[in-house]
Image 1: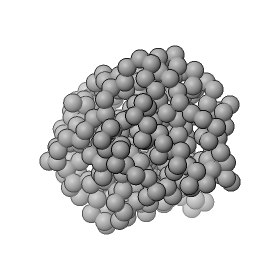
Image 2: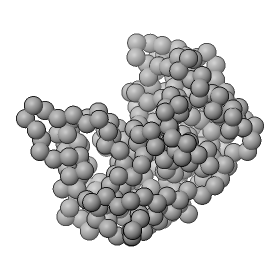
Image 3: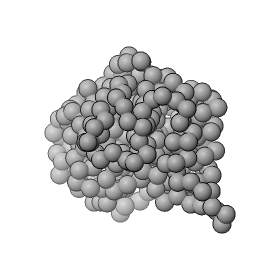
Image 4: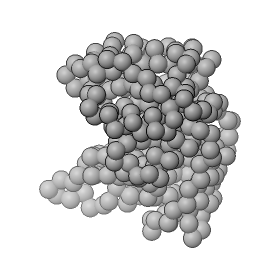
Length: 303
């Protein structure tokens, strides 16, 4: 069991600065208006400039522009957390342009999900620093109050604890380990790179959006053949949202595909955790020490 603790960024205090970055798809100021108010209502200062709204085709500016902007956020010691404004595609194009030396000396919370999985996993593995899989500003207006509370409570240093109903496909059990993972499609794209997380002895979390069911099967088989699924402490599956099928049906749900892929392994598997491309997108501390207990409710406790 791999429980070598990762460093946890300092908790935020009222009036601390939170940087907003767009390392992937472009975003405009109007799309952020409500979220900026939410951040301010929570007592923090949102930091951004016009470079955030750069555009080059689907991206928030060129690779160099996006990397330069994010680098400034990482290096600025007055900024205590960085929220990735939205997902899309593009983070993997700039991850190798970034220098994390100053970040490692003064770590801060990096917050996002979906395409931001690139940063969450890279930071965990290469810097030994916890990150936060949670809602992003583009989604704040649709996120549930519980989801938003889980994000801001974590930033404030409050412990995370969840209880939710068991899924009928669960393989019940107890598990402890460091949490890793994120978006399945993004993880699959990181296989073989220095950004792919170490999974042995870890609790692996997976979620995805708008994929074909046979793609889910292909990606799970890819992770399995690469040896990334056989020595987990547990597998947790979040939202598998708005998935697609072909004219000739694949014949299984995403959950059934995932369970079939790992059925030979003896670790517990939990489906239906409320995180991912969902309104109720609960915060998860990636690299944090997680304890899971089965019972009438599935209990998730971060230590």
